[in-house]
Amino acid sequence: MTEADETSSQAGETGKLVDVILDEASIARSTPDVEHDRAVAIYDLIEENVFQPQGHPPSNYVLCLSVIEKKLVFEIKTEDGSTVVTHVLSLTPLRKIVKDYDLICQSYYEAIRTATPSQIEAIDMGRRGVHNEGSAILMERLNGKIGVDMATARRLFTLVYALHWKG
Image (tube, rainbow, N blue to C red):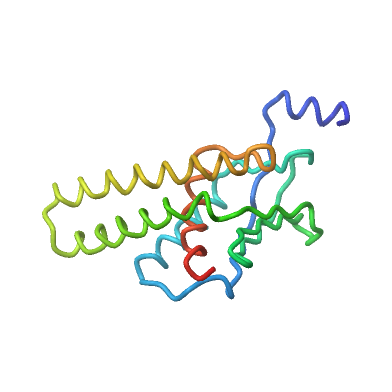
């Protein structure tokens, strides 16, 4: 690490995602609600994130997410398209939480059409709890590979959820 890198690191500077590309072959057809959540997650992720591949200087990065052979692939590139690093993660540790999240999302989307506000709020609290749990697992899986904060992990978990079922 150069002296400039150490200074940046000490000052709290970090990399940032400037684009997220989802592999279309990895995405299953989904409901309009899930499509909306995915679009919002990408927009919010690009607007505000902490994304720092370990061992690389702070920079603007492009993330290409895909699922290949039941593995989650994080291909990280520079803005000019040069590959920085590719991380391949097993989906096994996320499988149960994604399944739980899918079930509670289905309940939530049904509830917003027919349930009372207090019922919707209760289901949404459960949904957020499961989402936070999945985000924490994802942060754990990325530890030592890519530095992210909880808000970034939450948005990434939404995208992993969008990709997971097709893969």
